[in-house]
Image (cartoon, rainbow, N blue to C red):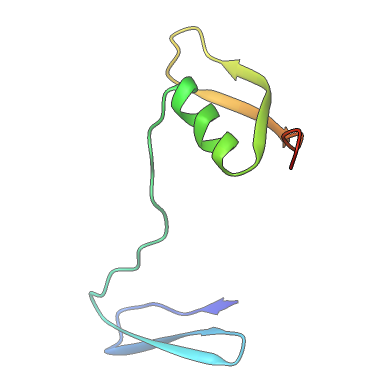
Length: 77
């Protein structure tokens, strides 16, 4: 990807074969942040077919990293 965003009146970003035009002052949304407690994130993973195999959390319980593995299929499925 090549990006050129500057103070000119019109800049372009090139990705694959498509061109995207941006005007000076336009914003670009680059990420979204979501907050989950450990139980909610584990449930979210389960809904997507994952199981939490490991969980690492800081002492204040403000930051966590989950080790997810593919969930075993339910019996009878």
